Length: 415
Image 1 (cartoon, rainbow, N blue to C red):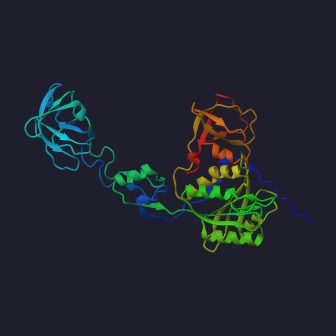
Image 2 (cartoon, rainbow, N blue to C red; image 1 turned 45 degrees about the vertical axis):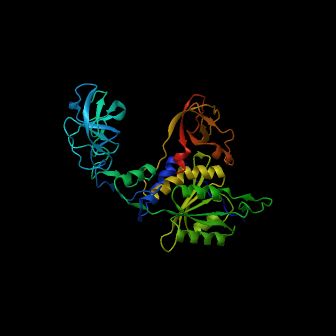
Image 3 (tube, rainbow, N blue to C red; image 1 turned 120 degrees about the vertical axis):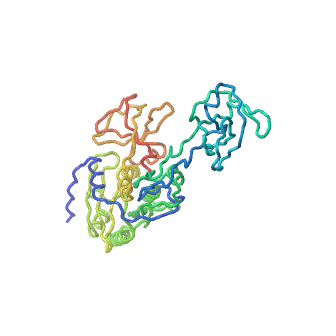
């Protein structure tokens, strides 16, 4: 007697599914303190507060001459050069009626109120440091960077929840932060099931396929700062699948698989998750990527969340970018979870839209419009390499050339 068919899960929108995922998953409680140089891509667990003004004193943004604007009565005025002020000199005092030779980053001598760039000055020989002819009108304050104009002491320059890029690390260093408190990396277990899967380098027997999803998903996880627990390919048996889930739940915060969980499939992953925890099967109203499984695998120390992605490579890629990425960022306590989208011009026609919300593989052309990859099948992984973004097309919406559409850069979806 055959097993009763499972009831088909109701279709839900992408926004509904994402909200359910984010409502269920809470940020990890643990953090660690690391050298600032080691924090690229990490999420701040505490504000970075400046202990100093930046710049710490008035300084010049140009090589030139520091002086008082009132001493330059007219263009062509000549002033004796009384001193030379390189960067690093502290406490120089301006002498009325003179100029000081000064170099970018040097502190402004006390009493001077302007800098004239060297291109507008003519050095003249003479005793000592000679003199200088000022060949431009001078306004008080010109080319001076004021103390604290960039950062004021006591201000938070980076907020908890920010993901640290190169500019953020530079800013942290600017305010003297040698170490940063960051969220612990999420540990994510990844494995595949299916006797048809083989690894590149192994013989490809009839009926076998190379396990591309393992490479794609592992790389996407690493790009988001995860510690990947790669459990490889699990034998297609119920006992082996349950054992892999138990190991994953003991070692990870989140378990990711691809394939084998859509309604009605005869495989061991769905019953294994149900035996080891809880599982919901969702139908998401998007194309590609309709089936999604979400649940939890129990363990003695609390267990791990489980997300089962579709098996087709593009479906797996898209659902990870749209649904798994925000979950991983939430685990790290990030405050910005949604990718930024941009309205751009479509340079193609899409006359037969799907009834589901579509994510089409596109790329930006030199004319500032979007080109469409000709084959939008969920099995065509070449489209994800060719593309530099996804076009977020509402359900049932045809596209005409010249129409403005929403573009999601892959750079926003993969990091």
